[in-house]
Amino acid sequence: MSNKSGSINLEDLIYPLFVRVGKGVREEISSMPGVYKMSPDVLLEEIDDLVDLGIKKVLLFGVPNEKDRDGSASFGKDNIVSRAVQLIKKNISEITVMTDVCLCAYTTHGHCGIIKEKEKEYSIDIDKTLKTLSRIAVSHAEAGADYVAPSAMAEGQVKAIREALDKRGFAETKIMGYSAKFESNAYGPFRDVADSAPRIGEGRPYQLDYKDAAKAIGRINQDINEKADIVMVKPALWYLDIVKEAKDRFDFPLAVYNVSGEYSFVKQGARSNFWKEKEMVFEVLHSLKRAGADLIITYHAKDVAKWLE
Ligand code: PBG
Ligand code: ZN
Image (cartoon, rainbow, N blue to C red):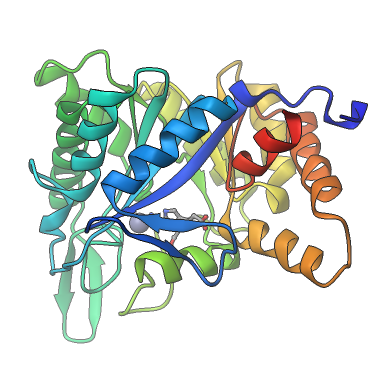
């Protein structure tokens, strides 16, 4: 391997995985070549392979087969993420399992929280949202998740989840906050996966305005105060200034999310022979490290592990 791969360490990569209901299912996501939705049994085999490749951390997203107004398939014993986590933890010990905690894939309206509707308007009911997010987090912790990762951008979500976990005896379960999550165009391919685009209102006003760096830094600070174990900037590549500023200001574990749009961009360009995929991926990862990322959540992780073998 060329020295360009030098400081990229598999310990620092987090590989996102999508788990759906069913058996024997491995379904490619058309907007994200090389990324699949898998049923828990297939996911287990996949994680076995990942461990062999040296991947240490995964981030699980659930793709439920039922949605309702309040996202009730997201919590409780039988939610798809908890089922997958249980299966993984029963069979494989060498992997850190992180779970996404949000409602958008589980709600018919596609928003990340519980909403109140009034005529054609809607608003997020923050109290109900925090209660439901806490319930999801506790369910995942009961199943054995090492980290829960709230991505709903609900004010106070880290604090609410921390308190709920502690109260239920899960003081050991850690929290990775999606602290500075911008309202980005780069989530497009991901929303296809879980069919999770918002269906009422304009966009996701609870996510951050990409023009507002100060607010992003404030939200990172807030998550640290609320006792997150890891904070995050998302997306990654368009936001390297935020990453650098966060790293300079806070001496705290910092993750970046190299999101679906960033991934698809690299893949499509490689398919069109605009660049070499491997070379581009290492440039991307190094730029994120250079800016100050400790951890990189990336769909490229499996390829990187193979390239580094
Ligand atoms: C929503 C969520 C999003 C992603 C993960 N969880 C974005 C959104 O729809 O707002 C994006 C991940 C990606 O694009 O790879 N809670
Ligand atoms: Zn969401």
